[in-house]
Length: 107
Image 1 (cartoon, one colour):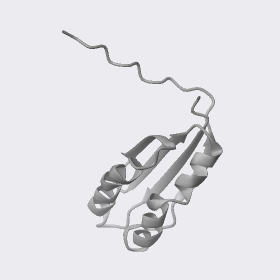
Image 2: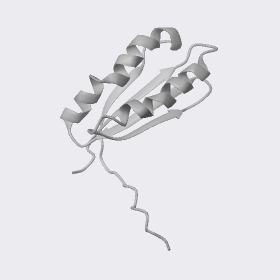
Image 3: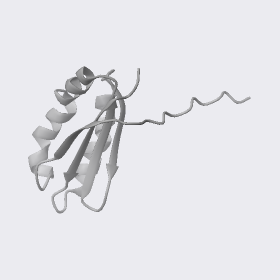
């Protein structure tokens, strides 16, 4: 199946909370590893206090499962102490995807 759906979330750390947001996002990888419908998940930093998450899904159902899952729940719980404002969450439709090539076994 193709990756057709995504979520882009941008968050702004409160002053002095940048490392805490970094750590929170870093720990999110282990959470989404348990979500079979989340095909890719990226946490990234845009600038000193702006961070983001981008994830992809094959189906709308998988995207909705993720949006009702552990990462958004944790963000809702910890966000008020870490973030300067509410997250900017956008549902996106993927137009084109270049998937990673499988690594060749080397002797």
